[in-house]
Image 1 (cartoon, rainbow, N blue to C red):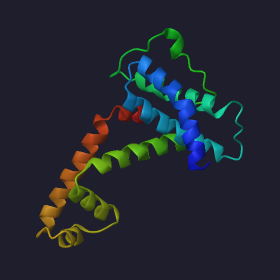
Image 2 (cartoon, rainbow, N blue to C red; image 1 turned 30 degrees about the vertical axis):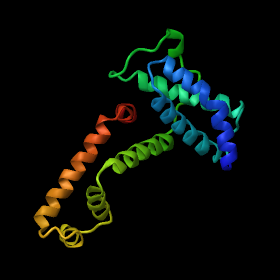
Image 3 (cartoon, rainbow, N blue to C red; image 1 turned 120 degrees about the vertical axis):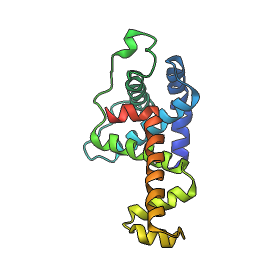
Image 4 (tube, one colour; image 1 turned 30 degrees about the horizontal axis):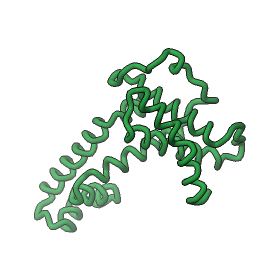
Amino acid sequence: MNSEDIKRLYDSAFPAIFAFVVKNSGKKEDAEDIFQDAMLVFYKRTKRADFELTSKPETFLYAVARNLWLKKLRSPRLVEVTSAAEAVLTVEDDLDEADFQALRERLYRTKFAELDSDCQHVIKLFLEGKTMKEIAKTLDYGSEGYAKKKKFTCKEKLFSLIKADAAFSYLSS
């Protein structure tokens, strides 16, 4: 799928997804996020050997996006769906674990990007397996104790950003 195909798919599928999300207590940003998540599911499904598309791609994307949005609405923090009929899911099957993992990773990467560059650097070095002593030296912190405190503070900030996102409750259930 090239960028022109993606643009055409966006132009034909997004308006219906946007209308559904907005009609059901969402905003444009919510619709864009849900559309991206649905595209990710679509892409992963098309890579499976056993996948057979039995509808138009737009229909499949709409069904996945609808399923994702309805699950998000069912979280206790959000408002009710506009009609009881909308609560019945018609998607062929639930997202599998690989899809959820991809969505979790997307949430992590999005929130990681919101951290300041110093926190990003500390966490990257830590995840690369660097010791606190090496991190302190690399970032010129002066002491291993300060590097440890900085890593703790940055991780707490990242966890706070992730937990504050509405997608967290959906993905952690």
